[in-house]
Structures are given as structure tokens and as C-alpha cells.
Image: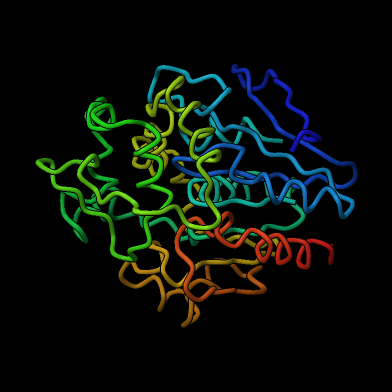
Length: 305
């Protein structure tokens, strides 16, 4: 870990913290919520030892990267503008799909985790789709109103909250009634083997300093992204893609997703899709839970190009 270099890069109107290691072709890792560059620490070491320059930023609003105060500073166009082989997870996966739509010329190949690409539905905004499926208590719907989730999160120790998020293994879509709140989610009795107290404390220290608003603002831009990306309605992802997901991942259990992956819909929207890996007994934070396997899958794919 001490070999990983940390720099600050001025880009797209903000100062971005970037962790990197190695020399060779660049592999860019994009994290999700509530995470940091640190989520890719094992992949950075693995890929750099095999002849790649592995790079993982704290995304806009996270960790040691600037957090613009305006919600509208977190759209797909802002975030892709911050980034110049591509690997994404959770929100990082969505950003990677956006990247491939907007600048496919800059990407040789993509390995994405957890979140599939869905062609834009011109009839319904994303948050309305989630609300129709799961109701107002669905976590993405609960994140929409500025300040509400932040106030809820502030009722509990940050390290305890991080454990709740990272350690959750229920594949059911997270619905959190207001009267219970995120603070009322079950506590972990013991940490999983892949997550140490040191790891938790690193995340907690950064989120205690920066807060959660930057990360939550990505969710608050879902509908705005939908509006901005109207010109790309019907566009396909044609670069080479490998997709991985755990069979306990909440994203894999959204109604229709498994059928979309297995019955040809995913391949239709992503003609470049070459391989799908479904890991048994693995939950949402697949890149940390199965770090070595995920690293090996990434390397085996990108070394072809």
C-alpha cells in the first residue's frame, strides 16, 4: 500500500485526488457509494504487478477530491469530464457506461461490476421507475430530497454506518421507512473476512471529514442525467465489455434484471458484451469481497487488447 502514489490533479474546475501505481497501459478504476479510491486498493496492486498503470480517483464529492456545493455539478457530463482500460462498480459502473456512450474513442475495453447498462427509456424518468417498483421508501427515492439522508446519517456513528452499508448481504431492494431510518438498519455482529476495522476506519475518517452530500448528489442527478442524455436514446455500447455481478447483489434482484442479462436484452444494448460472470454467494461489494478473483478476471480480459 505504501507504494501507491497520491497526487492532486486540477481537472474540469475541481481538484481531484488520484491514487496510482505502476507503469504501462492505463487502467482506470471508478468507485461507487459509499466508497473511495480505497475500494480498489487490491486491484491497484494486482494490476500494477502485471505491467499496467493502475489509477483510482476519489470521485467528485468524495474523500480528498473537491465537493462542489451545487447538486447540478454532479451530472453525467460533469463526472465524465473529470476522467480522461476502464473498470467500474456501483456508481462507478454507471459513470463507466456514460463514459463509453460519450467518448467511446477513449476506451479500449471495459470491465463493469454490479450495475448493467440499460438503454434510456424516453417515457419515464429513472426515479419514477424506481418509485413505481418499490415505493417511496426505496433508498434511491429516500436520497432525493437534499439534507434528509444527511440528517438521518448524522444520527449514528460514521464507522457504524459504514459497517451497515458495506456488510449488508440481503439481496432484497433496500426500503427504509422514514420512522426507522438508515440508523435503524441491522448492525453487523462481526465484520466479514474481507473488511477489517482498519478499512472501516479509513472510510469513516474520510466521510466524517467530507460528509455524504457529494455522494448523495449523484443520486439526485439521476433524472437530470436522463434529461441531458436524451440525444443518446437508443445508443449502444459497442466497445469490448466483461460484466461481473454477485448472485446476492441487490442490483441482480431488481425485477427483470436477471432475465435482461440472461435472455439477450443486455447483449442487444451492449453488442460489445463478451462475457458475463455471476459469482455465487457474493453480495454487492464484489470487488472487495472477492478481490483476488475480480482482479484475475480483469487482467484476463484486458490483456487481450
